[in-house]
Image 1: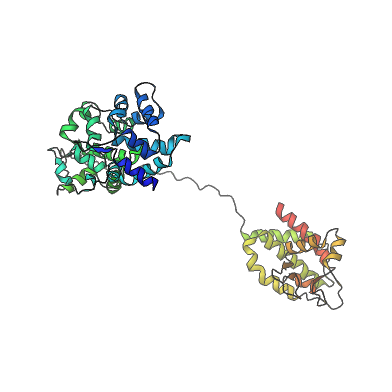
Image 2 (image 1 turned 135 degrees about the horizontal axis):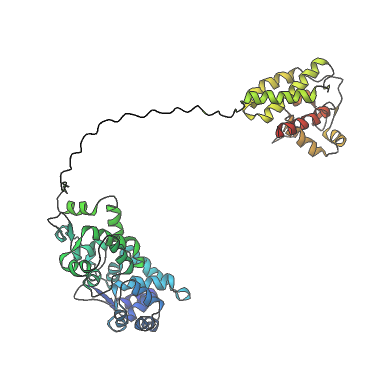
Length: 435
């Protein structure tokens, strides 16, 4: 209830001048922003002496120092309210007020004049339909001219906001002056002709872009909406369309005909011999290299109990090594690995040991032994073993060296022959990695 009463009291401090501009008393500004009246007066009075941060923001926004100081008695210009609200809402540090922040957000949504008139209980003329075509004239040279009144309506600001600085009665914002100068608009043309004769279409585009994106807290939704509409649409073409006209561009002078050029003989092209490209080993060539390493390592080693079994086991080592060193051939060699595994079925008289027993022979734990078997491609983890299943399952290559103990433990046990394969595979992997 207190906030409603506060805004009702502030509404009584808002006045509309004869020129349709809005002025807010210092007390009204204080009530709307949550700052004390003394704080507002002190900040404004400092403009002609040692400007406060707020006074500097107003000066940067185009207000003269004397005009800022006069606001303490004559009331605060409605166009200055967005700067004051934004300052006390976001830039005043520990003196920031939530009331000022909410007011600044409302200004961003509706614009300063519309918001202040709504607080006063009146409708803004900016919300009324405007015959913008009546504010546009087309010069003989084709340039579209928009009146100060029309430009102000399009930008969502009061007419005096543009008329005062362009007539010399106020200061043009530094950023706006820079943007206009970059397009060639400066000096007497800006301060003398525009208030009476209107604003050229290209300068109008600069002004609208300024109030859409570069005016800081004084940016307006009207300018943003208009600039988004004409972003890919020429301002002059838009002005022509508002007048029901179409811009026709005619060449200023006829292009001179150029003499036909006689074809020149094409110089001979020197053909350079192709550069020799470095040979890149194909996957098959790399596989043959790995196979050669395997044969060299195992030529004096016997893995099987019989010559046939020995050849099969050595072939399995070669396949595993090729799959590790040439991943692109891994899937293609799986059928070969399966066929080799089927030829080395375990015999009934072979003795099998647990990973714990075999790991002790190599000086490692059962966990490390199982991990090494997995790295060699002899077993895989059983991700979700149910009751009675082993935590490890043999691969096709591992079936040649292991059986599943169907006793109470249901564990995977290994032939002692796997130890002979153990060091050889590790040596082979190390050699392939450094090849």
